[in-house]
Image (cartoon, rainbow, N blue to C red; front, side, top):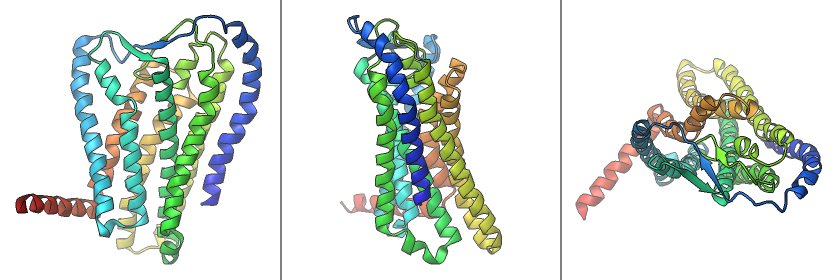
Length: 343
């Protein structure tokens, strides 16, 4: 466990501090020259399409997906924390993951849905960088939570006799707190120097919400080095976590070969759900930040997938493939219905 988080923490801090020092020095002279120029107070988002008919269809589709996402993840949270049978480390982490997914779906989606009904999609300077901060905060938290869930499965399958000793309540809480601290560190390392860039002219963002690669390109100075820092901070960290997760799950798959057929089936069912979520979450992240200068239409699709589609897939994957969760949800629903009838 210490190895997982030390790799992530050192990766974020070392990459940032080695690279941003030179970026700050090289940009300082240009920034001072542009200091007295008028600053951009708002950004214009181009959105997904210029067709109003398509935007109305997307409005209806995204509205339904968003409501289902929030309700689905909320149902998982309520089920996990109100069912004694699910009072285990795996479901504790799953409940926290659902909370992050629900928040990740909400940081930009409601405004994006409303923008589909507007001709001019405007966001304030503060609102734009708030979106960027929340995107990287929640993205960083989810990365570490997924690593924590991989560690939990590793201990449960490879060291079952020591599982409850290693994954006790304090360790679970520590894993969640660490994920939020590392997410805050990841976001906090990038935002300060990006928000202080001089924005004095172009203010059109070719996307559905604000993100660092596109917004920093609008600054009034050469931001090539800034783009490199973004790739180093976000792209390499995403790729590193993804590789760590692949190695972890590979070790688990090798271990379960020695289990009984029944044990193998149960372990594979759980692992399949985890691995599917990992691929769906990290795929768009790696593509966007390792190749930040790629085709804008592809980036828009990945942005939609990352912020709207992925959060709804997590509850679907974990509930449809998990008998315990489905049984617990049915029991919770029956208890709710019975309590309504009694009143």
